[in-house]
Image 1: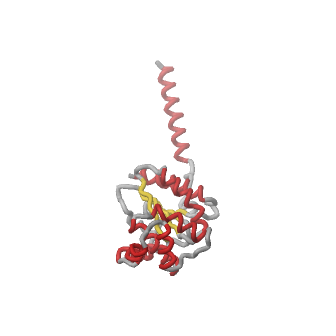
Image 2: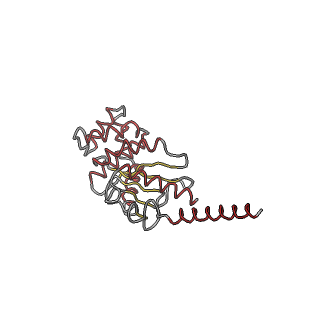
Image 3: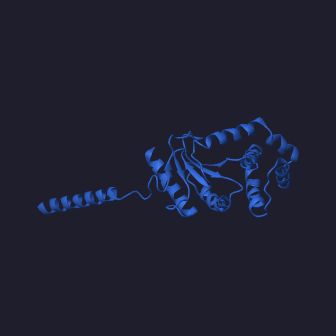
Length: 214
């Protein structure tokens, strides 16, 4: 009886020590080093899900290389994750490219033209810097030029572009690619986050952190 009591006591003590050791371990990723907490949370698209927002620019070579990685990640994302794209804007050319993205979204052809726009700029050295050049690219992938022009100049698309431009400061975006997790955390490469694979590992960590907090 005494032996059983001692055994149970020792087992409980060991488990308590192990639990304490786990809690004492430093976090795998550290705020301010591996990611940044935004000054104020930004409203997400769906409050019932954990939003993962990819911030990109078609003319960014790093974004071009990130695309297959983040596409693969998104294809395998858990059901409670809401993956979205967000075109960065800090000059006139980026604004035109954002307008192209939201035009594709308006016409339901993002999956059709997203990759070709990246390819045209990064592989073919076509900067796609005006409506005519973009209309030609969309037409080459089955989009009627008149339909493209209507969407490109529509109130809905221009509103989306303006909203994206105004959110740039909310998201604290200074480079691309970035990832914003649940409107709270900014993830990008830096001295501590050296690769794009590292970025996605941190995204997974933050998603799990948000899931545990719910």
